[in-house]
Amino acid sequence: MTERFKVAANHIQSVNEDDYFRIDPYLLVLDAFSRISYQSIYVIDCYKMNFLYVSENKFFLCGHTPERVKSMGFDFYLSCVPQGELQLLYEINRAGFAFCHTMPVSERTHYTLSYEIHLLHGKEKILVHHEISPLALSKEGNIWLAVCLVSLSSFSEAGHLEVRKRGSPDVWKYYPESRKWRKTQDVQLTERERSVLALSARGYTIKDISERLCITEVTVKFHRNKLFEKLDVNNITEAFLMAVNYRKL
Image (tube, rainbow, N blue to C red; front, top):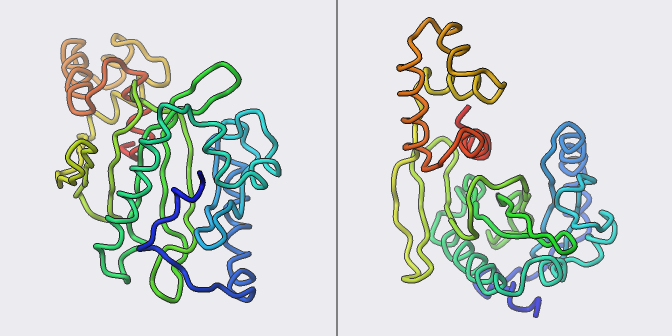
């Protein structure tokens, strides 16, 4: 079943041991970052079809140790993603590689793909936000290594495949039914909206925010409603998760 994660367009002929030796410093940086972040980090090796690194953050591990997840490799997905969402995951994998290969080789490491998927923690399903960004390319210009970041999702269902480019306001959204991408503009928050969101996340009431920012409570409510509308969420918790996951704060 893990063969379904292989994409012919991303075929890598060979990677030698010297190449693996050269990326060790990158893994040390990721390991250091994982110790100061609640997010889970792991690195996919598209040549060996396994995980080169898995952080100790328990959020992603689904009850396993990092060593166990590394040894499972792509079988981890088959074990920890609900059966009903595996087809979605295969399609996300296919569409993501296909998108990447429409871009110039020199720009392929500038893109980040994100989507929502459930992970099984015993009998419990947790919806996570999953981000993947190329870390190293093969000699052919294909994706050899990719770094993955896993955090809590602000959505209510799986899917929502999107691609963003570093330094660009453009967002490409994928529609599985038609297998097509549509380019749109990323959501931009005003300084006031970010202030209201940050204070709300710290537990400040509407009255507290009004006094701190020297604006009326009606104005605070207006900014909160605009936040919900822009981010397409229903409450301040979802708004904060969305803003953190998509780096709006």
